[in-house]
Structure formats: C-alpha cells, structure tokens
Amino acid sequence: MLKAATDFLARQQQFSLETDSSLDVVLPSGQKIQYDHSAKVAVQRPNQWRAERTDEPVDQVFYYDGKSLTLHNPVGQYYATITAPATLEEMLDFAANGWTWLPPRATSFTATPTTSCCRM
Image (cartoon, rainbow, N blue to C red; front, side, top):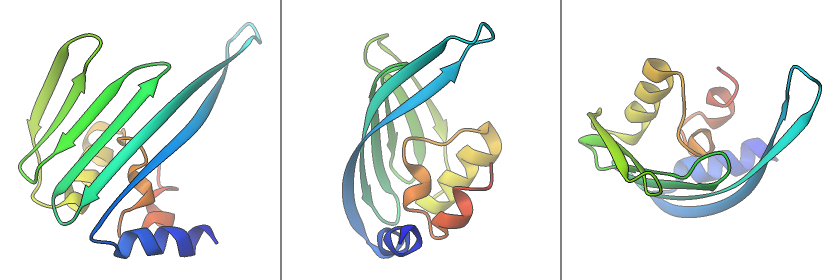
C-alpha cells in the first residue's frame, strides 16, 4: 500500500500535502523526549517546490525554483541559499548526497520513493 501511494505521488505533476509527526529521542540518561512537528509541502514538477516544517525542534521553510535552494528560518530571521540542480529529482539527490539531509517529506514524491526512503 505504501508503494502504491508513493508511486501515485511520484507521477503527479502538481500536488500538496500536510503531515504531523513525532520524533522520540532517548538521552544517555534514559530519559525520553518527544518532538512533535508539522510539515506542509507543495510541488509543481519539474522544478518548483516549497516545504515548511514547524514546531519542535525547529521552524524551517525550504524554497526551490529550479535554480537555487533556500532554507529560511522565520523565527531566527536568517536564511541560506545555494545554487541547485535544474530538476526536483536532481535537487533532492544533491541535498541527500551532498549534505546528508533531506527536506521535509522529500522521499514521499521522488521518482523512486520506496528506494530513496531507505537509502540513508
């Protein structure tokens, strides 16, 4: 069922989605901390993308326009921009392989979502 859902998204030229998720962290002391956050993603293939992550542990907005990738922190009032590859697929590979991170929900809509979500 996951493969069918991600394959469907991978074929779409334009879509948006919203998610809520939690991250549990176990400290060396054994104490567990739960971070909750929401994400909103909008995609227009081949090269338009916006992703927003809010709540804990950080607020971030990512923008991609086919030329550059920008990370903006609205709370801290700072941003960083880097030249990026021309397509969404190439940008996500660039971010994952060059920086070892992926923007919010990135693996949900790549051309090979079930492969890319498990490659880290």
